[in-house]
Picture 1: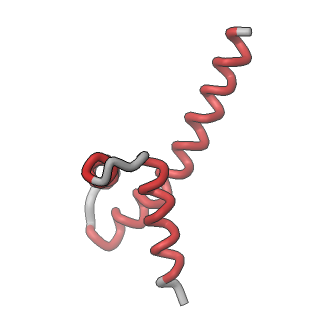
Picture 2 (picture 1 turned 60 degrees about the vertical axis):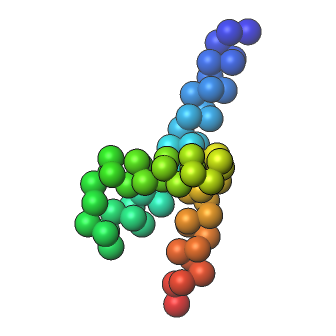
Length: 69
């Protein structure tokens, strides 16, 4: 039972990493900041808005997608 739960947590962590990775990249390039700085900005937005980090990341991706031609 413990192994199945650990596997599920591992899968969840990998999915979260993918969700957060794209908006980090979206912030890094135009603002010339590091990955650590981009992650810090995302966590700050999450805390200030009392919103889950994944939700902040997804919102940023959606906003960025709206601006693409």
